[in-house]
Image (cartoon, rainbow over all chains, first blue to last red; front, side, top):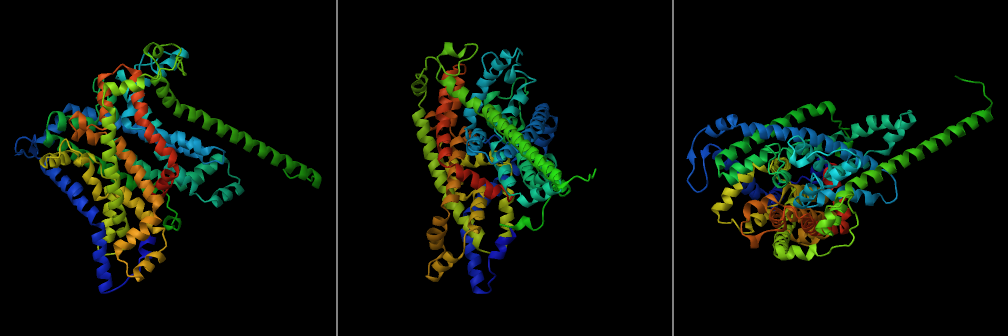
Length: 309
Length: 296
């Protein structure tokens, strides 16, 4: 980032004022969009969270009532638990899978592009299509998974129809879709300088030692980045559960965003849904802040390399 | 362990060590290759199962063990989905939305990115940090207010809530294009400026032609993003003749919940354009992600 500022020559007087005006004119679409579609709606949402509001009637100020209800609402607790459960499993598993795939792809094999394509493909499939596909794979009697288990003589669980297996089933779908993270890791791996590996080899490091002492440290900035975004994304898991289970069975896949969606668009409780959204925003801000605070302990930035390119 | 070995023995020993290392490397790389093949089979199997099921009649679906290549191949599921639901209409709607949003994204994001890449002003750094931080903002916070605003504007059941925001630049694409613009040499822009060309002329005649690969990446991401979008159309579109493919497929799934062959045919059809686009533009994906991913 530092290079960009260095590239822009500093000029003084009228010219720099003209350039400043040009800058603001050029970025005006984003700035306007930020005000109209992000900052404005956020403030509006915060205000709505103190109202009883169903759109058809004018909003009624009820103070902190929505937040008080939220604390006592058992389904908020259930949906937060489900979301946490899903995040704790899905994020690390998908990241590990992505790293394994990226390591495998970071080799000189013929036809490596084909394998890269295969691993990436699940992420470009429309979520609706892939969810319907997985519903068929998980179908207890005739689905691919239980058929395969049956051939091995193992009776398969009910997957999406089972309270115990519904969340792991959705986690598995997330792991199948880890190709996006894989490409990010692959790009990171190809940025690790070859000399580091050579130096490690000369020092007698084994493959495993090279992985732990060269690859992983050099990859920590990328891992950190995908962890932060992965958690934020995972806390908003919605579409798969909406289509595959609609929260069931027995609320076992009622995720936070699904419950928020129901409150907003089925029960028309706009104030309550807004309060829920703000609670989640605070939770995510807290989690992200903690991650940034812990980051210096494990994320390795090599001073000069950070700003190249 | 030092022995007073004669030189020839030492050489022979070294040779066998080297041979052993070669052998180990070959065993290692075969193991890696095997793992690669095995994992790719696991990843691709769901797709094969989808296509296979879409070519089956009902009685073939419930065979044990399952047939991977259906005998006979039943093609009738594909025309059948069009008689059950107006998928041609859904496709047209989706195309209108995708093309309009992709055009809007390219236009607005390249302008904004040009500003951030080449111009400095009081507050420009802070604004860029703000732009980056909005990339992390969970969209859940703006879901309800957006719906209320668009309801007030009477935009419900039109394409406008899905299209208009893309004309106001999305942070991810701005970031991606800015990163690309920074890699371009400034000489050409200076030449245009000396010839009396304005900022917009430079943007149009220099930056955009030089940035075709990055613009291609943005176009593809934008296209796929809107082609696959589910939550937006779910909230804003009510009448069937306005449905996009993803909503149409969802309704189709609810109506034919156990007709797996039909559902798999519909899913295959919806997936096909994405896969075709991906195969034609693979490099764009990898480069685009590398451009933004590395920098974090």
